[in-house]
Image (cartoon, rainbow, N blue to C red):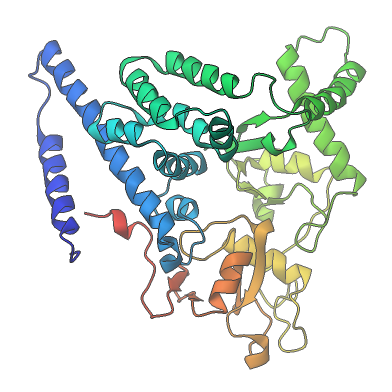
Length: 410
């Protein structure tokens, strides 16, 4: 229980939510359900406002460092299991609200949604705040107006008001080639497929379109029934294939980047093997049939966990982890093993659990996959262990274990 009494407040809130969840809705009429829905929406806004406030306080006090995290965004991803986009939005909203007291008050009262706050937040970017000051704009007045609009209008209308305000600050538009505005977000779904969104300035967009169009126009077979979107997607994949095949891409953690698939040899050769038999380098699961297709034009590396296979135990003769051992560690760990991290293998180093200089062997049992930040952390007080049950555990410098999800448990 927290000494400031906040633990009691949260306990009461949790008890009320339990009581709400236990209520039977079947006997309620439509109007009654709608009335309750309105109240729940307002309560949800208020709760999200408090969540945002606590995230901002955690950022200001560097609370994430307690669990070995660099930012609140990474803590939210690892410990609260939020998607990267949701975690990032919470952090950005907390920062923006410090400059928008009227919007923050409406959010805390439940009159303004988190989506509306996200629409307004761009006006607090440093360049826009500076432009407002230079133009003599009363930001407090803008804050009050936007709070009123957000509480009474649809997000689309609010977005138009925000856009008109930003356009007024910079009527000539951005400077040519605003490269700082470039972004690319890729999301992997449960079935391994990916979707994404990108933002490019005019010059960069022209380059990408020219490259894609060259492949689209070079591949127009007779009777092609693909849509324009499908043609461009195929062209993007072809661009990646060409770059990977050329072998000119930068080295990725001691090896040239290639499409990687891990699959048991029995599954690979058995035509009856079903779906989800192989795991790709970024975590997607594919069928054995697709793995066999990739193997037709690829190199096959065998990793055997036994005395008659690849030499996984190099003893004291090697300090630097050889490639075969790294592949074995990646196969076993699949990501950074520090609690709440999960950074992909290509971000990671292979760490000696018992340092080589202290007598530790270079072998699979003495190895752990850690991203650069957490590799540094375990050399400065934090500790990772892999007990016989095979589940990695992480301990703080004071010896307490970092338990994922525990702050969220009732």
